[in-house]
Length: 155
Image (cartoon, rainbow, N blue to C red; front, side, top):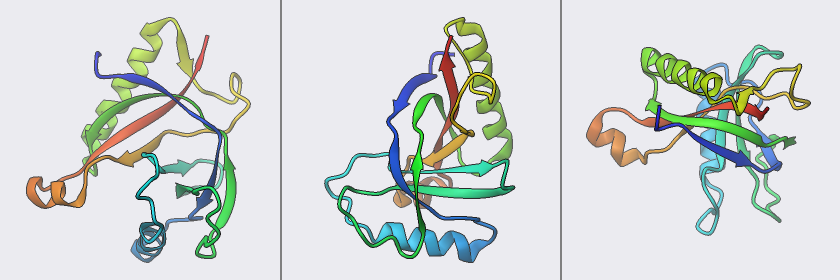
């Protein structure tokens, strides 16, 4: 699949939403990080994943250097690492699952990389998503696009 790309995210200091269990949690974290001045800041800067150990969805926001207001959310270290990435329609479960399967197939066929597991990776990492389209895109198209990040390691 030629639309798979491999990126490396550096270790980051991030603000962690904690459990996103309902719309209020989602909107509160979205409102906080949307208020952070990011005019001169790299993107992507936020990611979501389902934390298997904790059993809930988490949202991370890369904290700009020197930024102090964390909105009361926990500051944690994000391990970074290699990810195989592809784009999917957001919130369409079938499209998301198809994209994840395509990424996994590509990784297995690459013979250079393998999916990150607790056996081959010292960092605890999960599949992440990041919405890549602005609000106006959803207003006009009726959906967002998201990048799906599958953690990988080099063989």
